[in-house]
Length: 88
Image (cartoon, rainbow, N blue to C red):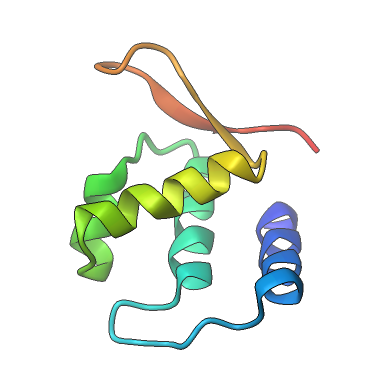
C-alpha cells in the first residue's frame, strides 16, 4: 500500500488529477490494479475491463503506464505469467 500511495501522489503531481467518471480515473484503476498485484493475484487487462467497464485498449494502456513507470513487470510466459511489483 505504500507503493500505491507513492504512485498516486507522484502521478497527481506530474500530470494532475484525472477527471473521475463512472469508469474511475486512471489513478483509481491503476491503484486498484497495483493492490491486486501486491496481493499476489494473477490479474490482467480483462479484470480492469470487467471491474471498471473500460475498453480493452484503456485497460492495456493503464498496465503499460504502470510498466513504463517501473512499478510492475510481467514475468513468465504469455500463457502462465503474471505481473509482479518491482522493488523500490
